Amino acid sequence: MSFGFISILLHRNFYYITMLRDPVSRYLSEWKHVQRGATWKTSLHMCDGRSPTPDELPTCYPGDDWSGVSLREFMDCSYNLANNRQVRMLADLSLVGCYNLTFMNESERNTILLQSAKNNLKNMAFFGLTEFQRKTQFLFERTFNLKFISPFTQFNITRASNVEINEGARQRIEDLNFLDMQLYEYAKDLFQQRYHHTKQLEHQRDRQKRREERRLQREHRDHQWPKEDGAAEGTVTEDYNSQVVRW
Image (tube, rainbow, N blue to C red; front, side, top):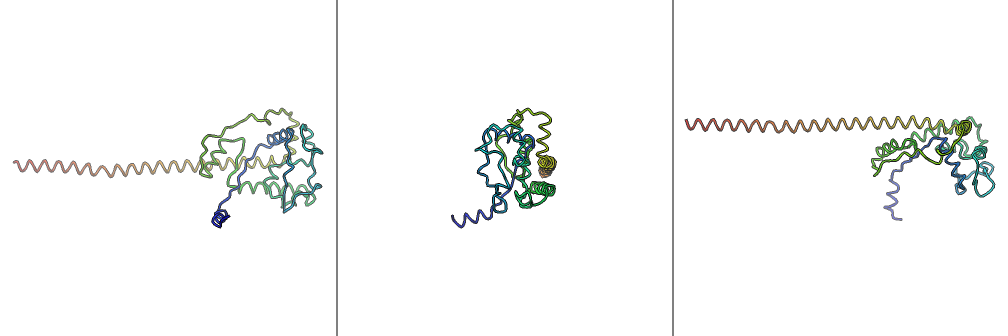
């Protein structure tokens, strides 16, 4: 590797971005994914330089995968990492002792995790919401001065949306993901603020551009009119002098 390439890497700006999803839909989607045989066995879950011990992070199933798991079984596993996944993925786990649940009491741990996730989300250059595809595209393009060749499409029919659950099951999913629910409400509010602020700035720039164009047009007209008047006066004077000579 050349020193020039290393220098480019050292001076390159890196931006953290993420996408958030409605917690209930995200949870159901992960359940269907696991039900089809997906696992995270290769994930190291590194935190503070080490992976969690089996006692800190037990598995929810004894075999190679959790294929065919029912929604009730999926919800009944208390150490299922699907619970509050979005908060855990965004938060600084080292603040709460990583996966060691005995490091502090549960209430304090949850408060710190949620606040850490909110802070990290707020400090990201960009984040989007899957439920607002067009607005997400707008913010991404304006943030990074890029243009997608085609508009984002809002797909409201997903595997999660095809799952029919009763109100009791929905309430339990919300309870299991109570931190994600709070984070998502915060994210929606922050997302809308960023969207409207960016829209307002764009409208201001458009108005300024139109004012500048009108100003340039006026200056152009003002610059032309004296020449036309001067040309007319020259013609009149010339005609008058020619008449004087004739007389």
